[in-house]
Image (cartoon, rainbow, N blue to C red; front, side, top):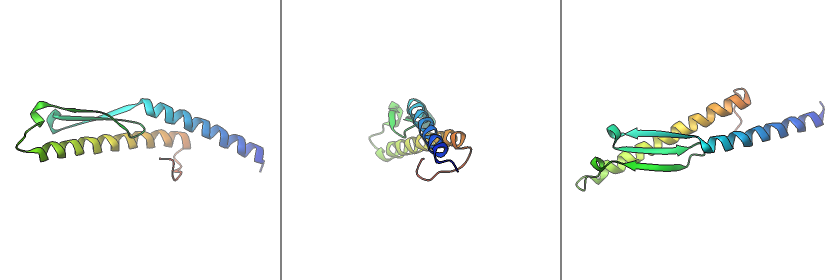
Length: 102
């Protein structure tokens, strides 16, 4: 096998991967739970970028409900962001899973 060709292909893959990661950082997914009481938005880098809490979710007598809604919204948004990243990675790798990339 031609090592120069392999190195060139590896470099091209790295460049495409870097572009994809930049693109994912700019994409966002939102999860809304509790009938719209709490919304969490996560970017493609799995960073929480916004959290919206409706006033109806703030019950001083039941702080546990708000905590549960926030956890559910954030976890669901992170799951969606991970799925989005995995789908983009599958396009890049042709479906081959490469450990450690996502």
